[in-house]
Each structure stands twice: as structure tokens, then as C-alpha cells.
Image (tube, rainbow, N blue to C red; front, side, top):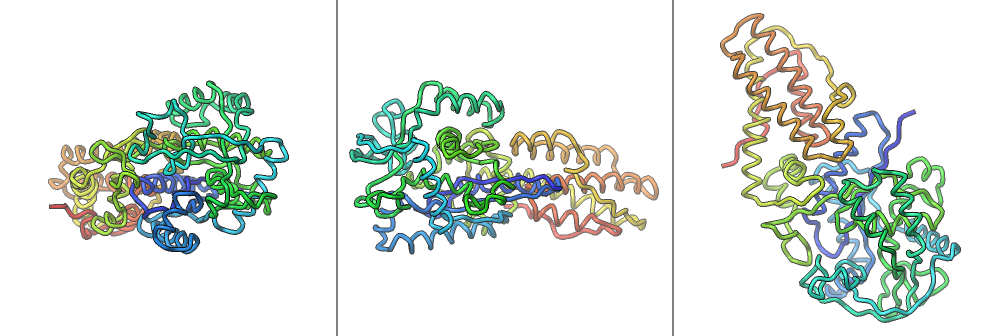
Length: 475
């Protein structure tokens, strides 16, 4: 029986068009999903849209639209990323889907029955863009450090709360049991430190009179669920919980990918909620960094977003995938600029991979003997550095390893000078080079799927001929 692998992104808010920050996350998830398929595993890859919350409701009102119509329009835009970025997800969940709403209600009732949901009146400082309460220790100059240009709102009302404070010890035990529960280690250290300092109960509802857009609280028509509580449940509602227990058990627990501003919600709040509902915890959580632009975080609220659709239209899908996966460190922040993109494109894709493929294909036209159609599946046959790096989510290091291989082959060609060889001497060199290029193409399959397929088709044999450049040089 094939191994099962479940991976999910976070769900982006639909309060603005898709931007390159989320494109990074979903491409990273796509690489991992494709990699596990190449290992012969049965993969479930989930993404979707988070469609409740105060800022979404306010945005719909600003545009003069019914909230449902507003989220319908924006959900379609996010789903369009599948084609633009060549994504392989097989499930797109929306938090307004009926089965998700019903799952959220059931989850609420389980936490309530466990004594972890109670009513209380508290005064909090609230960042609408984060959709989170902010404590004094988190603020910088009395502002949210993630959205410094947005004014904090004071909310003082009676809401339902989740008894987060109860789960300090269970969470610390969970972290101790699995030393790789959160990757990278720096983020794991950060969340362990946060939980060790003590936990504060958090609000999980809003008054319907103030926010009519949300999942109704079971048994209380005056309240709707706080969007963070409802949205996190998508990870299990997507795989059949609670109506399809066999399907749920088949896939859960899974791997979650999230940005560093989601660390607390994904690896502490959500895990406590799962324990409360009597469900297994997540398998692993990979925390990635942000994309910056000239040193400033790219953010919808800061108004400095970059449109992934425009970039793909201008440069193509695989070049954008390559830049984001190679230039943005898997564990840290990285910068994007078109100037740097063009430099990387010409150096690595046009002059690097593209030039190597073109040189070898041209040389292959000089010999008449047929090339073997030997199948090279890098991920099934090569237990080495790249596989190790991928399983540690070090995607940029994996590509660096492959490009070092490309550079080494270029040097070998320079030393061997096959253009000066003839007959069997030339054939011997080219057979080795063809096998090496097939291995590179196989290794690239999760990262640059279209490019990988083109190279594999061109070099499958028995005849190998020159074709149009993979990556025409940018001027």
C-alpha cells in the first residue's frame, strides 16, 4: 500500500488580489507535493481561501457588495493561481463551503463540551489586519509591528473565549515528544519560549450585531465565530472531518506550511484546539519567511504588493518559480526586485541550465549511434543530498545543489573539449553527459515541472536534436 502524504497551505484572506507573498507559500507546498508523488506516495494537497472576518466584511461594504458575492469574486482570483503558477493541488476549500461551516460548528461543540469555551467580557487592543488581539509586549510604539500604518482598535464586549491557558503543559509535552514538530529550529525555539511564559485565553466570537458575516455560534444567535477559530478547522474539514471519519483518518495528521507571522496560531493555538476537540495534532509545521521589497515586507496593508499574474505573463511560470524557490531562503526573509530577477534569470537559467542543454544537444547531432532510453528517476534512485534537503524543507539549498551540478558539468565539458573529439571518444563523453542531463531534469521535476518535461522529452533518445532555447536571454 502506498504511503500517504497530506500537505496544506494556510488560507489567504480574500480582502485583496493575490500577491507574491502567498505565491511563494503555495509554490513551496507544490514542490513538496510533487516530490512526494515522485516517491510513489499518495498525496492530498490542500489550499483555499479564508472568507470570514472583520476586514473582509468591511471591504465588501466599502465596495457596496454583499459579502458572499465579494468573496466569490476573490476566491476565483486565488484559484486562478493554479494555472498561472502550474500548481498541482487537488483540493481548494473555502471557509464559506457548507461542509466546512458544519465542521466548524461540530468542532466548537466539542471544545464547549470539554469545558474550554466560556463567556467573558474583556477589553482588548485589536489589529483588524492581523485579525488578532495584541498584548502590550507585542506592540512597537503602541502599534502592531506587522501593520504599523494601521490604527489598533479597542474592543470591549462580551465574547466567548477559548481556555488556551489550560494547554501550556500539553503543548510543551507535544513539543518535547517531537523535536522536529516545527521547522526551522529557530521558530521551534521561539514558540516553545512563548508557551513556556504562560498562555492567555483568547476570544473566539464576535457580536453578530457588529459583525454579521461569520459562522453562527451553536446555540447563541447573537454571536458569530471569530475567523481564526473557524479558518484553522479547514485543515481537517478538507479531508472529510467529521462526516467521513475513514477519509479523515486516511490523511490526518498532515504537514502545514505557514509564514512566520502565523507561528503562534498554527503551532500553539490550533494545536491546543485539536487537543480540546479530542483529535490528533498536526504532523509537522514548516514556517517560511517573508518576501521583502527593498528591505520592506511586502504586505497588502502597506500597499507594496507585487502581482504574480503580471510577472508570469511577462517572464513565464518556471522562471518565477525558480526565483522564488532559489532566491528566497526557505527559513528566512528574502528580497524581490525585477532587476535582481533578470540578473538571476540570465545567469542561472539562460546561461546556466539553458546553455548546458543547448551545447550537449548540439553535440549529440554529430554522432549517429542511438542513445539508450534509460529512465532516470532521481528521487527513487538517488538517496543523497537533494533528498535530504527537501525533507528538511530547504528548497533553496536543494536548487543550489542542482545548480552546482550544472556548473560542474560545464567545467567537465570545458576540460574534455568534446567538440574536438570524433567517433567512439565523442560517443563515450556524450553518453555520460546525456545521463547527467536526464538526472538533472528528473531532479528539477518538483521545482520547474514544465522545464523538466521539456528536457526529458528532448533527451529521451534514441535521437537527440537541438531545439529552441529553454530560456532566451533577457536584454
